[in-house]
Image 1 (cartoon, rainbow, N blue to C red):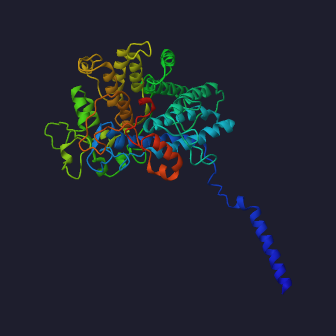
Image 2 (cartoon, one colour; image 1 turned 90 degrees about the vertical axis):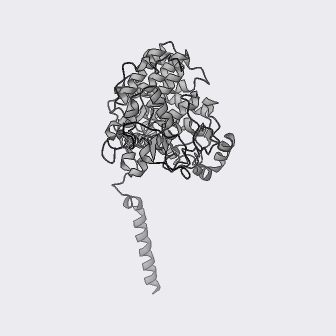
Image 3 (cartoon, rainbow, N blue to C red; image 1 turned 30 degrees about the horizontal axis):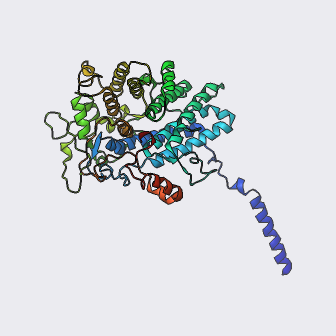
Amino acid sequence: MKILQYIFSVFCVLVITSCTKNFEEINTNPNAPSTVQPSLLLRQVIYNFGENMSYEGFVAGDLLAQHRTALDFNLFDRHDLKSPQLGGNPWPVFYTNLRDNEIILNQSRAIETYAVYEGPALILKAYMAAGLTDLFGDVPYFEAFNGVEGTVTPAYDTQEAIYLNENGILDNLNKGIAAIEAYSDVIPLEGDILFNGNLQSWIKFANALKIKHLVRISGKTDVSAELQTIFDEANYIITNAENAIFNFTNTDPNSFRLAQLRVGDFNNFVLSETMEDILNNLNDPRLSSLFRPFSNSDSNAFNGLLNGIDASSTSIALADYSLASTAFREDTSTLDANFITAWEVHFALAEAAEKELISADAQTLYETGVALAFEYWNTELPATYLTGTAAYNAIDSSPLEQIITQKWIANVINGYEGWIEYRRTGFPELKTISASLNNNLIPVRMPYPAEEEALNSENYAEAASATNDNSINVPVWWNN
């Protein structure tokens, strides 16, 4: 009996040993690779970020910028920004895609055949990091995006450091350009739905971003020489054909998200009174390109609603207000996910010229920006538009106000950008909302989300302390 037990024990040991010897090989699914090709990740990052931020721009950014207002589920529209409803939580969009982009960047530096991805990954990192810090201020950055090998509780970095330090926004744009210029192999950039693998277009994209963000921080540091050099070299996005965009389609899954959701979600957002007044004052035909006449109108008229109503005590009839145009639901093939465009670049340069940061004709840059913005939104520019109330030196407004207002109009769907520029410049003049939950103050930053307090509590506590308990009324560095 003892001999049988001994033989059985030895047999079990041999079986276990033989199984565990090849355990990893046996239990690895050959159809589920442990690493992802950078071409697939690049496509995913560009599409995921662009699609999510286009949706966020419509349902949240446009409320902050007062392009649209919400009829219900509108705590965000009333400036309770800590209570996102149909949108208003871009934090995970940024961090998910910055993390995946970091994988591309690491692969490009570790594997020679992937070297072509380094420049675009650096430029995308700068692009997304700038959007993140412009919304929130100080955020986890230098220790973030690499949780597999690094810390999962990264420290918060100052916005100034994120912009100006090594491996920050401006440095990564310069390094991205340098990496592309140094690339001499013939392996193509695949998965690029912005520029179809054209590396020179990525350089123009990077220079366009430099123009945008140098102007944005021009109140804090001297950017004149660098801006002048970029302007003189003229290697940035100049025409709409060069825009950093990708097109939505008319069919799922690549149509604009508001075309895929139930009609009640789409019908929750109508023309704001602010947008209506500004477009009407300018006799701007984009009103009918961006919105549709309200249903109860017998003369194809448009009607906007003051932002931030108290839906519990205010009775609103949807038929009395203008919904977004068919481009946002029925025909989204005319709509783009917009990273940066020629009109935005021209307006930034016009501002730089007006402030004498560069030597250039501000009026010409402004008028070119207006023409490009009309073209972008598929609207014919009236012959008298730039000689009337939209003129560069119009009687009732300053040139800077005209520049920023035109940028604000064109940034519909990129609504966070309109709000950011308002915070920076005070233009255009936004209205006091109907039933504010923020003491009638227009917020000047997004609050850190609740999950940060739970998952990164020690670092969050320090950042919250620096912003008066995570207040939405404490300005970010470039606005302070």
